[in-house]
Image (cartoon, rainbow, N blue to C red; front, side):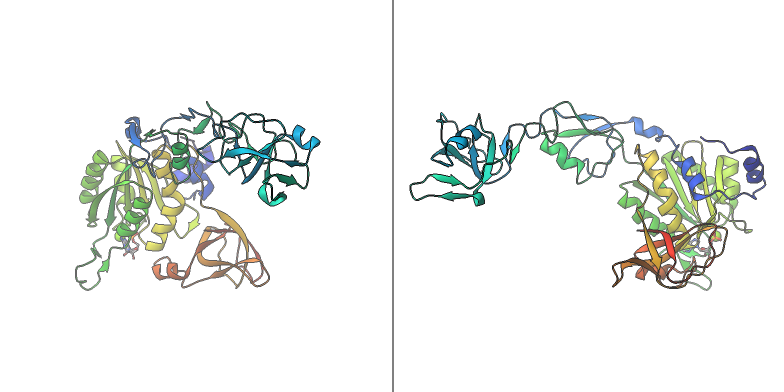
Length: 418
Ligand code: AMP
Ligand code: MG
């Protein structure tokens, strides 16, 4: 783990120092894979979908494994065409049914896309560029270039190439690539076990009536959906009441069963906020204050057997911090070698945006290409961190730099994150 500079450490200890998102990410991206990742599994390609590859996969074959045609047309020898531009057809080569006869000089072979190139062929001329005569011969309008429309052995993948690396995600691109090489199985890391719990006396699970002062538990559901998307194994620890002893017992229990424990709420400095104190007591805090909005109180640390992410209670903050911070934590713990951050695009502000200097803002926005062909972002809904409905009209976060103040319509936004 990276260590802070002396001054930063001092400020951090005094809780005056807010880590930037970049510093937090540097920290997170040094997290080693979870211990459970040592239990490598061998799965069929179908079963391996959305897993992380645990081996360097080497291609057993060349792709293409034989020279073949990229077009429907005629396989030719250039030497023949220099003698006559009109030649008879000696036979056919179709995909799966190659031309096997003796190829006579001064003739061509009818060939289809994907069909094996007859030996000695220099080029394939597409059928649109020839005239087929009544006597069955073919007249070429122009002389083709050497190798034209021929896909050569190994030009896509060479035998012995590493095609998928250890730590790469197995998805709709990498798995069909393995299938195209005839590889039936692949070694993968196990699914990450993640314990999820919400904290707060006010929380009620969906399906029960609300009493005065109570609210429904949004975060546990939102977090579970995000975890499902990331193919984690979810251990649902329900809702914790605001009592320190209950926090302690639940954290200890959860970390025995999981690789990562994710809580929400109770991470700030209120009288009923026990997350940080309990994490310090039964584990270790790496950082807990970030200069981002929403999401300032976010705790990252380690319990005896599991890593720990404490999300803020406000649902928008919980989701923003999950998106920006927990996703890379999960990627690293799951064995992903190179984490791809959410994509970001430059855009213009379509309207004035309110922004206070000091924290990196993630405002909910709508990204589109305007009538002038320029990318622009509109702020949508209410921006309060308790106002989850703002997500309904948004398709991106408007990312506003820490040092920036209010933004006027027409100003450049460095990044919109989709
Ligand atoms: P806390 O950090 O525990 O003080 O919570 C901050 C705000 O988020 C409070 O208004 C809580 O009621 C709310 N909150 C905390 N947890 C959840 C949750 N799981 N679902 C919805 N709102 C929550
Ligand atoms: Mg609370």
